[in-house]
Amino acid sequence: EALKRAGKQALGDKAPTMTGYIYRHALACDMKADGADRNEIAAALGHAVTKTQSHYGRASGGTKGARVFQIEAERPIKQTHGTGHRKGRDIAPTNAPEPAPVKVFTSPGFEL
Image (cartoon, rainbow, N blue to C red; front, side, top):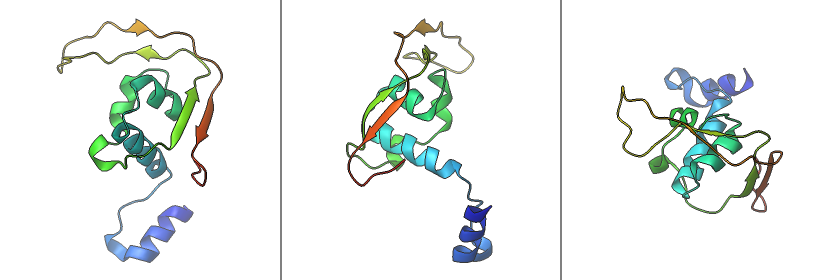
């Protein structure tokens, strides 16, 4: 609620609805722009499958620069993306190696 109020106060009635999800989208954008692989992005966002990240951010909207150095997931992440995927065509998921508990290391001064 505080974020919504701040957006409305700063931008008036033209303010888009702002929620805490803007931070998830920003992190996904930055990681995609920086070339992070799908497993790393899924782990950072707490997703169990790689496909979910398609709803978060685009590389073109991100900022390049190493912000997240290492991510270890608490549980395995299913590969649900494939190359050449077209709408309406199923992709058989593959199993990722079992990751360790989640730990995110960032550059100095950058907080998640």
